[in-house]
Length: 87
Image 1 (cartoon, helix red, strand yellow):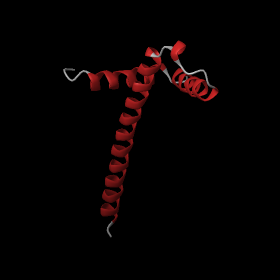
Image 2 (cartoon, rainbow, N blue to C red; image 1 turned 60 degrees about the vertical axis):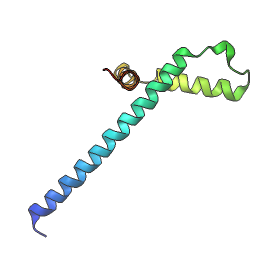
Image 3 (cartoon, rainbow, N blue to C red; image 1 turned 30 degrees about the vertical axis):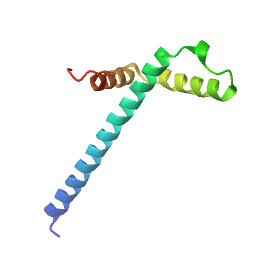
């Protein structure tokens, strides 16, 4: 196989990988945005008073708080765009 054909194959494979990663990022941002909206609207007084539920809620909140401001903004924006089809 000629060298330029090998490079074209590598470029095509890399483009496919980048596209796949961008799609996964989009999906993860949507999940993260939905989780952030859920936590923001959660009434903690109505949570079941068991260690598993409290632990799961704390873990989710900690992970959301650990995100960069830009990532969280992107995540919330992706959910708004999904919920508001006129955008």
